[in-house]
Length: 362
Image 1 (cartoon, rainbow, N blue to C red):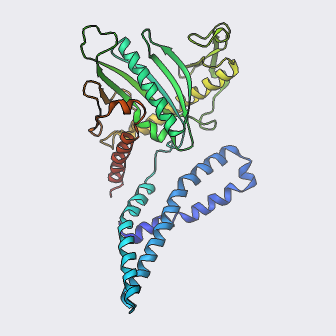
Image 2: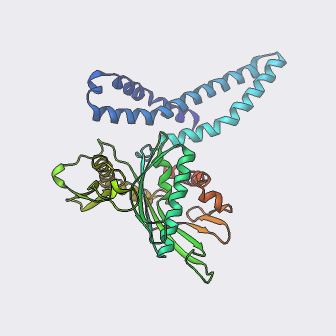
């Protein structure tokens, strides 16, 4: 892609960006919350493109100025300074161009959202539930590292520890779903289970599903379509939780989707959190069509959300974790299980960016 063509594409968006800025301060727009939310979303998507484009434009202007000095200036000190500036700018321009090309490719429209994560113990019985608990703690530690908030919505403990199922929300300011979406799929563990007396290595699995949290204006729910049931919460929480009808189960009649929340003492709070999850699961039905479209194009399939695909193996005897989508391995499994998963996600993002550039015909 030629320099001027790339610059023209970015600068061509400036009028749209200025228009969005003006509309966001318009009292009429500010009074229409649904429209305001959408415009603000569009503004935030354009902002980094415009910023990168202006930095690129300045770099090209500085490069041109330095070349003029080198050609027309007789002072050797100034010429040497110009050479250094040219070398510096020419070294930075390829990375700037690559970044702009990626920014110009439409991103997953939901990357900036919070995430709802569901972990289910799969094949392996009690050991699968224990492993599901290990994965939950891994994400818990990762959330602490990232400064995210983790809220458990629902859980079904395993008989020997861990979880048959656990659902939780991750929220933060830096695009939680855009990071966590790479965790969707089947996670496989190879180790000697706590319940194994003969010391034999067993393979178990747990599935992880990650959904973008639906906002209030993403899904319109008709109260007549929802059946609400109340029941006593189970599990830890004390008498106040277990003896009052504070737990909430919502059934969306048209789709058959059922969600429940029993983590709060308040029925009102449990209802609010169950409604959040219901919106998210309904929204995800449409979002999955978008993901399926990506899967047909990208060989890496790093963001398809397909919970049936085996994506990663945790091999305890070898102290190794391997991500099968990109054939990436790390031989520090304890650190990985303690939440140090960012390096793997970085590699997945690099692979996906390469696929996105290929899609764009670059």
